[in-house]
Image 1 (cartoon, helix red, strand yellow):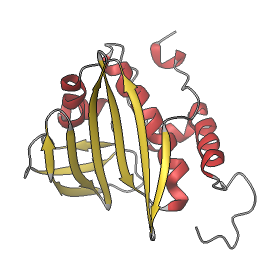
Image 2 (image 1 turned 180 degrees about the vertical axis):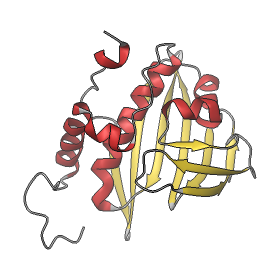
Image 3 (image 1 turned 60 degrees about the horizontal axis):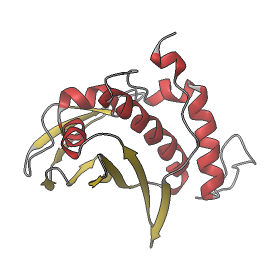
Image 4 (image 1 turned 90 degrees about the horizontal axis):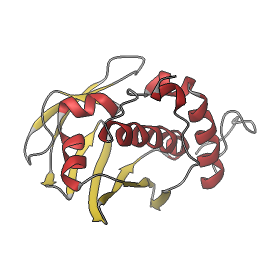
Length: 190
């Protein structure tokens, strides 16, 4: 059995949401057993991003001012957005936009590893979806950095994965968000 076949995501954890006016922010925290430098490289290098992130990058995200095209992986229609890196304080802080999403990555040394925190704005009805998707991306990242890659799981492929369905339901419950599988969404405006 391969590493991927054995992979089962842990319970929904390390996520919170904040609301500021009409703006929602999803905050995900993950403790990784890898150095800040190693995690930084995985967040900025296109070759590494291709192994775990929900987008491909045509350039390095590690330098302020770099303009990079980000292509969403697994989207029904090819979605390419151009971003400019607005902050890159290696190996501690990275900021850019992905589509309409503000992306802020904070890396803090903790023991021999790194506490990785992602702050991203998101539509309220997509919070549980986003939390479940990023949870799996972070698991894939951890496996990759441990030298045991399981391959990227994003978009429709991730949704078909049984662990994603469970995570989505757990995050929805945690955040008090009704899912399409739950009570009727008719008339909901969240």
